[in-house]
Image (spheres, rainbow, N blue to C red):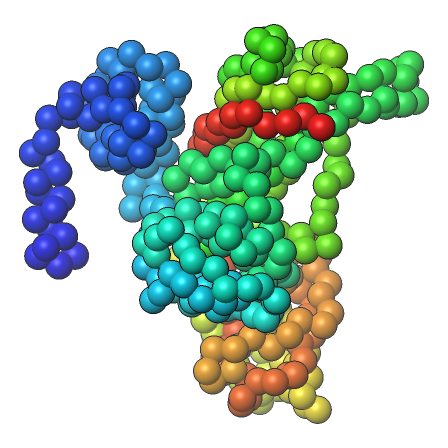
Length: 397
């Protein structure tokens, strides 16, 4: 941390926390999110200070962020804040600039979009991405293997809710009749959402969503009920691998001509709390080799490179209970300039002695040189956190 940042942090610590509680309860949305940022950094007595906020909704948000920061400690994922080189130009060029500033690799860069002008060129990842959606109809989504693509996106911001480094989207409103073997056909009304993290974080899974309050445009209060049958639709051709679906079931109501005047809810997610990263230099002598770090062992059992094809067999074992092993498409082979070899075949299985084994193939389509590194990450500890979201004036049809 440089001297300037230390000064900023020192001045922040001198501020009266009660002034941020006042702003949390009565300020604009932008000021309230700034208050959430400051209050989340309070020490062990922070919960008691936040509890004095009279606004229940924003009190919940600030408490959730304070708990998340306290639980994660140094591993807390701050929102990814970026500054673009320019705010006017062809849509795909602006999207590429955003991706490069975030340090992510694009496998698909070219998509037809006219010239656009963004309102600002500084902000969080999702703030700037939201502007690209509104102005150019573009989105940046994670594809298999951890690379990203520029794809068509929603231009309607009514269907998006931002909560620091998370974006929650209202995917669909579904009224369906379900038939299950052990019960009579029944009708279920549900709202389907997706949540994704910015490239600086990662969601491992969603536990459950919950309704805080929902009011239709006509003033009808909607009531949450048990979700009997999950709705697993809404997947698009340009699926975002970082997004996770969840549903909230509602008691049936007459939705004709209605809209959601106010919708507030929360979702419980599981995120990494401790991650072990590996960057392994390949060896082609024909013998197995291993790498060990922080209780995790990676054994490369076979590595072959011929005719521009890479065949790789490796195993991962961990001494940590609750380890989350990477999916096969999260194991990457890079060339000497950091470009990924394209994955062509993946097979993985849990092994009897504990851990996981992978059989993978990659192809050199346009890489510059020979394989220079094998990269992967293993989550050795997880934590739960709550993310709150809010929508206004969203049509149901």
